[in-house]
Amino acid sequence: MMQIAGLPSGQQFRLAGWGLAAALMVALAFGAASHSINWGIEDIAAAGLLLGGLGLALELAVRLVRPLRARLVIALLLIAAFALIGAELAVGLLH
Image 1: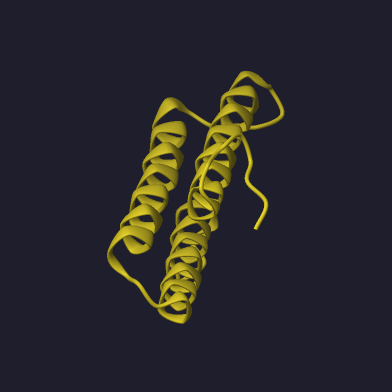
Image 2: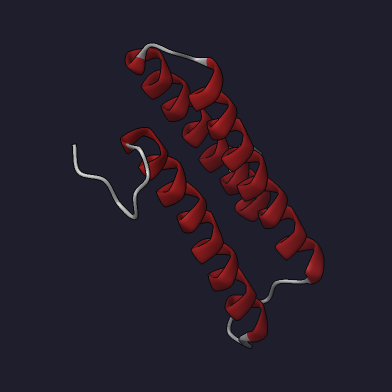
């Protein structure tokens, strides 16, 4: 398998995941500075906690679960939970 920047192949996905989280946090910061998005500091903090929690949970899943299929199932469940919680906080999807 191809290596990126000398990283073992398993760590490439971790690097991509954390890079994605960082890019989303930058996007959130720019969105907060824009007048078209009405977010307060508590909304940015909640989004940051959600993204950080998702990243940490995915990292734990990668470190603790060995079978690839189990990792994928856990990752999909975590991403689905993240999306559901985010939708509930944003628009009250479950009310």
